[in-house]
Amino acid sequence: MIVNVLPTTRQHDSRGAEESHRAQNQRVGLNTAVHGGEVRRFQTIVLVVAAKEAAEEKKEGSVHRDAVLVRLEQDKRISLIKAWEEAEKSKVENKAQKKLSYVGAWENSKKASVEAELKKIEEQLLKKKAEYAEKMKNKIARIHKEAEEKRAMAEAKRGEDVLKAEEMAAKYRATGTAPTKLFGLF
Image (cartoon, rainbow, N blue to C red; front, side, top):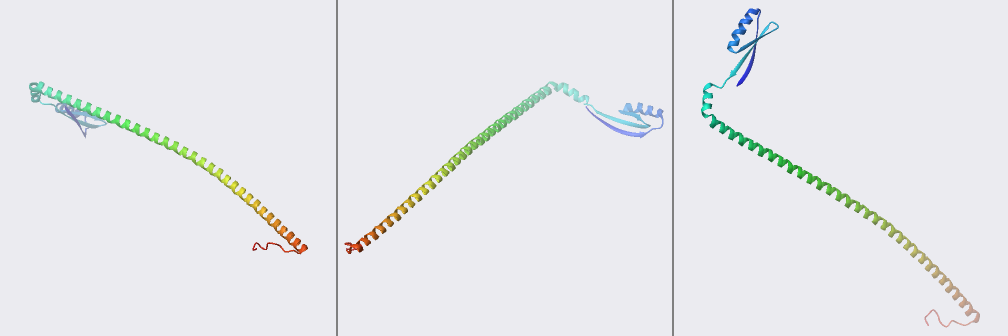
């Protein structure tokens, strides 16, 4: 059954004419309403399934009803399958998303751990580098000190040898004798 309401309006000046139009329109399926001197007519169209179709339905009613029930059952089954499929897809998506977020968190955690270890190793290396640099500076200072001591000893030895040579030369001059070894040539 389909119902359509089509409004139509027209001006009316007498109430008696209104009543006669209302009675006439009700027979034909038209309704009239008066609002502020304006007559509004609503035409109601009703489509009714013909009696012929009703008779055919009675004859084929059980067959048709069974076919409709089978079709409804199939539609119901299909809609349940679709709903199940959507639910399963949603579960799979949620599970995959959860797994991906877990993997991301695991990756971030491991990266942070490795980076912390790397910083710790770098700090240890910097500390060792500083210790070794200090040791090398101390070693260089020790070597420099030893070199100074050796220079001082060499200078002292040279001074002693020069003094000794001067003393020997003075002795040879005083005694008038000549040295037995001349410059290591003889």
